[in-house]
Length: 185
Image 1 (cartoon, one colour):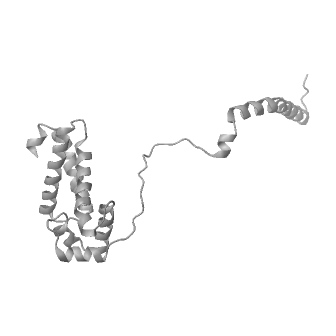
Image 2: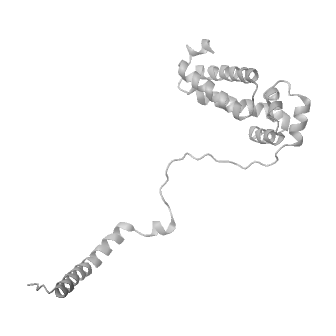
Image 3: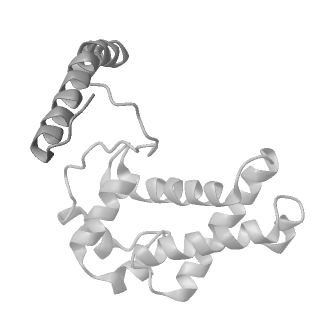
């Protein structure tokens, strides 16, 4: 990876990308350190190639995109799926429940036959169509809220209530003065 750092991004950016891939593969239960390092090196090489063509992109984002693409390409022929292959494949791997077997098989070429058979028998058939939220606050839009014109309503209330509030305040002061025996002039 050192030979690509000089041409495409800083060493710190590539270190962050490597760390992110490391965490991602660990989350996929890839516990074999050698296998994980081989996969990370391959994915970083691909990301560096794409970064050379598009220098403005983030190495971490490119590395993670390469990881998702590699998983899609790996799962598509195994599960005979197009689209969502990585999502269905990862869920199916979880259904297998054997992280040790995954470490040896993940992104391996060729895929071990017994692993492929087990994966197909435990394949998760349905995955919801997930939409990623940008997590940006959105304005409150409700039909009732849109129908009520709050500034106009506040102005009308202020005009209608001001004289009544003044009369109420004067009445209260008069009542207190009468109770206390103080005469107002």
